[in-house]
Image 1 (cartoon, rainbow, N blue to C red):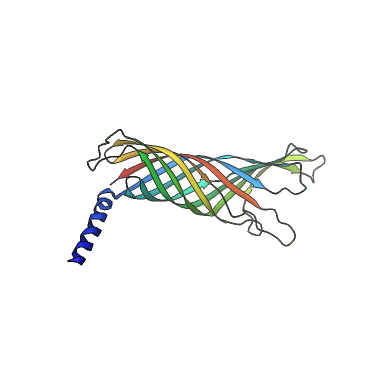
Image 2 (tube, one colour):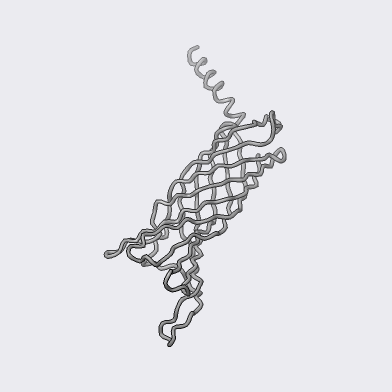
Length: 232
């Protein structure tokens, strides 16, 4: 008898979770601004500036409750930056960096809750917060811009078009915490549109430490993106 009561209680506790549990998949796209930080040491005339880029990806989410879910996303995100000098205005380096990233986040949502038939009891708009951790890999980099040809007399400005990755200098792995806040509009029974502002905080330097020089550099992009989700 006691065992039957325990089984009944467990089933009763799991039933709401079973009814609320829901899968969704989607695609995302947007823009990002990369905050690039580096220790310049004594190179005071060097300027390192962030740059705008893009992000695209696919995602999946499993909702345990109407307010709690687990989301994973695979995206390609640019983490671009620019380097110039105060003294030599003709020196202008643009680094276009492409990262594959896998953020895994806990999703907290709030606002109107849809019933089992897909109808909102108090509207179709909900807010949400994503918190988690990401891992990434630096896939490719392209260096463009201008510099001086010091072998010519007088020195002339030349165009730069070359590979931006240096295996001896660059650290290609990346990871860190990620957080975002946004709003969702359920436009149909199985479709939802989301807008999110997300920030990736890098914990791994994009530059390796050498025996003589330590100049850590970090890429931490702020992302603005839309997501189109299909809800099963």
